[in-house]
Amino acid sequence: MTTHPNDPSLRSFIEIDPGSDFPIQNLPYGVFSTAANPTPRVGVAIGNFVLDLWELEQDSRLDVGPLGVFSGSSLNPFMALGPKVWTKTRARISELLRHDHPELRDNEELRKQALVPMREARLHLPFAVSGYTDFYSSKEHATNVGVMFRGKDNALQPNWLHMPIAYNGRASTVVVSGTKVKRPRGQLKPPNVEVPSFGPCKRLDFELEMGVVVGQPSAMGGMLTESQAEEMIFGFVLLNDWSARDIQQWEYVPLGPFLAKAFATSISPWVVMREALEPFRLKGPVQEPVPLDYLKQARPQNYDLELDVSLRAAGANAPAGISRTNFKYMYWSSVQQLMHHASSGCAMNVGDLLGSGTISGPEKNQRGSLLEISWNGTEPAELPGGAKRAFLEDGDSLVMRGWCQGNGYRVGFGEVEGTILAAE
Image (cartoon, rainbow, N blue to C red; front, side, top):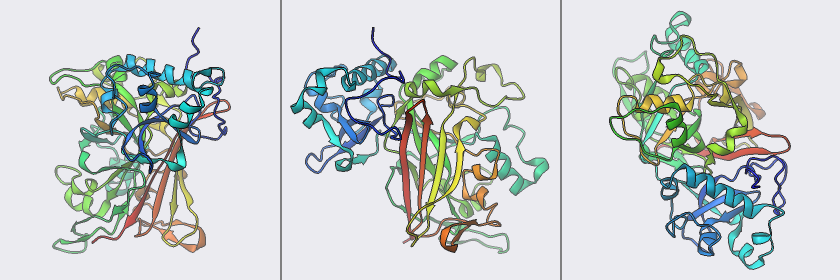
């Protein structure tokens, strides 16, 4: 009888710290290269190593179909093979890494070729982003922003409780963790001036989000059931949708965000498979009013996923925590977002990326953006050494982390980091 890859009792022959994001129960996919072999290829994170799947494929230890699926610079060819292949491959990788399975454990030559120390790996954007959509699905975040700009009695717009709100973003500026972000430029018009000017953003912000990686296409003109949408989701990444609040304030009426959100979106290099998150499923908040039939869910579609944000101010030696929240608070689930996205007949593609929208919780320390943390600049966050931040300054570095805590292990995402450079 084959042991399921999510079994908490599984152990790898590789020594893994209990606090590691990458135990044998996780096995997230990414794309990496090394100085010795600069060609990008697909790997899986296991403890402090990257398992080179192209090496295993060449050695006939992995058979996923056409040879070379793992030899390229993106996960798209593998994702296109579908959920049955994803499940079968994850089970096989788990088997190869188990402490009681000799095939890789006792093959010293193959281990040297296939197990790359994480410190030697350069991590790349894990998949080719076909399209990018950013949602607005945290009730706490939407309420906070609404109170700031429209007042308490008109915080949520009338449509917000009836459907997942979103806008189409730019796939061209989705970048992997560690990519430096230049401060954007744009039209600025503070309320106290009559005409706009053009220049660097003065109110640069982050948005703590999760990203859904779509691994299967849907037909133009069709719709998706809950189970169909669920099966299309390959996995999840951490996502920081950088935002220029002052550019956004002037440009978003009447059509919504545009250049204020188009300059950079950072994602983590490891894609944690939906299947690895199964043990952490739970029901989301009660939805009132009850969603229309096409958005109804029969299964729990939220996840108990801890999220943490830290900020290292320019010139500071160490980062400081500024937010700690959980993905479970999302009002509209990832499955509902995908069902809604396709409901008009919009075709979805392999490699589409759906941002969850800023994830905030009910408490003040659970706010997922500086806009909320500083309450639109009126209550700057206090950092060690006396520094304060209402919005991000040049040289600031922001790090997001996320993980699901199991019994004696955690299924984590690593981190997504970005440092702000001055505008040119």
